[in-house]
Each structure stands twice: as C-alpha cells, then as structure tokens.
Length: 179
Image (tube, rainbow, N blue to C red; front, side, top):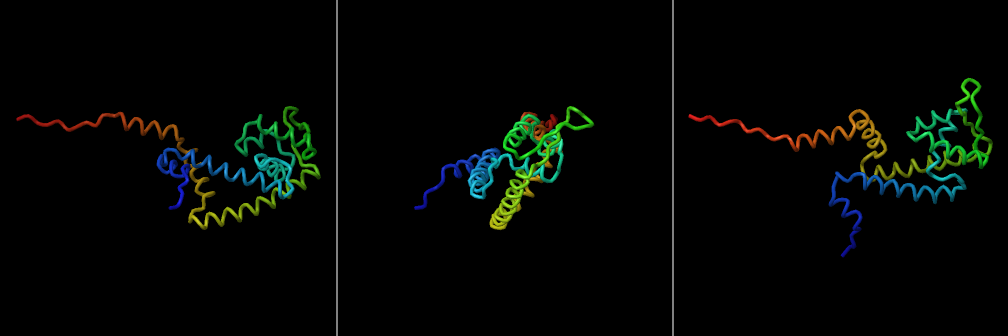
C-alpha cells in the first residue's frame, strides 16, 4: 500500500480555510529549490533578494522607496538588502541631487553580471514552472495574481466579517397567523 504524506492529507482535511498553509508550503518548496539552484548557477545573492536586484537592473538609478513600493516590501527591508548589495560591490548608492532624502540605486559592473545570471535563472524557472502549470492545468501565477487583485479590491478581512455577520444574524421566520 502506498504511504500517504501526512502534510498533504492534513491540508486536504483542513480544506480551503487553511489555504495559507498550502501557499506557505509551496513558497518554501520554491524558495528552497531556488536557493540551491541559484548557488549552482554561480549567483551569490540570496534567492529572496533577487527581485530587488532585478528591479534595479530594469530601473537604473531607482529610488530606494520606489523599489520597496513596487515590490511590496518595507523600506527597511529593501534598505537592508541594498546595504548588503553595496557592501558586496553589486550596487552604487548616491543621494539624489533634487532631494537629499532620496537614495538612488544603480548596478555596478559586478552587479550587472550578477543580475544577468539571475535573469537567466529566472527565465529557466519560468519555463519549469510553466511546465508544472501545464501539468496541473492551471496557470498558477496568473491565478495568484488574480487572487491578489481580488483581495486588493475587496480585502479578506471585510469578506470574513461579512461571513461572520451572516452566521450570527438570526434567521427570521415568518409569523404564523392566528385565526
């Protein structure tokens, strides 16, 4: 008899109300594979910071705040990664001539080489993930983007409160007539 995976069975048992559990697991599967694969490709930055490097590659002299906003990260998180990039010679950071509070981030030659490696790895990842999407019959990337937009339009917290209200609102029965 085939051995069952208790993690999968329990997630199925819990159901869609625990979707965050499955999304977290899938994220961990992708991230753990990504870290190892990136190292094999000669990429030195952590997989979790590659989106920042890619953003800088596509938007030269990007303001730190814009990077954070565009990726949905906190300013503090991006500043920490950019500081690490700068310490490793991957980026050059300068203060804007127009606004002394604004830090502009550009890739160095070394950073450009690293970003090119990341771009090539991301293109291979896209092909591999598309293969998985074809296998399961769902473009999961597009489905998750649509899901994200739906929650931005109408946040989950509001939806939960609506369901809670529906659960506690007493159902009124029509009055029976007395003759």
